[in-house]
Image (cartoon, rainbow, N blue to C red; front, side, top):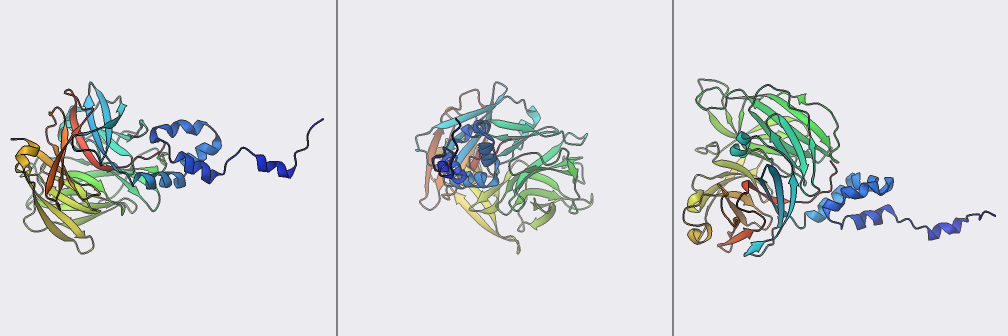
Length: 387
């Protein structure tokens, strides 16, 4: 005889509400999340949802970390470390990718874009890879549609449409001796917020402001990628330095004038995030423990302010003759320095508290003698985006 199920029997159902499942999953390590999508269709739907990703990111934002990228024995590694590490040493967690990157790009230093909501973009000639260092996953995008070998790439996120986008542009001539210098073949690839591919090809877009990228790019919370550039579309004109803003949602370029006498030199300037504002750092005198930073205080008015910093006891902290670059400031307002030529063992970074006027040396465990091309990123957050 079959037992007839009564309505009251639903009270003893073993299933949990979706909100409760999400609250439980959000407390798990990021690396475990992709494995759980095979548990059930319900779990897969929860994990891939924008609500869950935003919930996880909200928790991660309360504990940002450093992200170190480096190459060892033809394998690419990423190490994450807490920003609240003790001065003596910093314990890390490691993720590896079996990728081979072109040596020329490695030497240029702009082969990896700064993290955006937990994801990073890596360029290898005309190939672009999206990676999630927290989960160990990566996604190869179609090759960039160009025959040129010099490609500049930038990575950003549109918070309105919940879309990641990669911007690539080519440059016909990059030597300052061959003018004019302008970027061409501006292309965009769009991915959904869950990093699912929304389109299978690159799209050509129009750029009405001739310029040539000259620094790395940084994507801010307003959905705009900022990078330093040169503007010179006329061979008779003098090349000028400026900052370009690329609106990820509108796919439009805007030029920002720099203060008088401020110039961008290739390999000597970087764009960084300073307390939620975009800033240009000049590394010309970093080896003396000095540097200048120009902060864009008002985007609409294009007002800039200058910050000059002199790190105390620089010989004791940095060493007698080491070239260190400022990588920006973390959420606690401390400036972070890393070596330009990372051949140190043990590898270390320097944290400088400007208010207290104290510089602290922090050693990073996990970087051995044969680690090369070490790059330091600030305020990285773990994200369960599934690639």
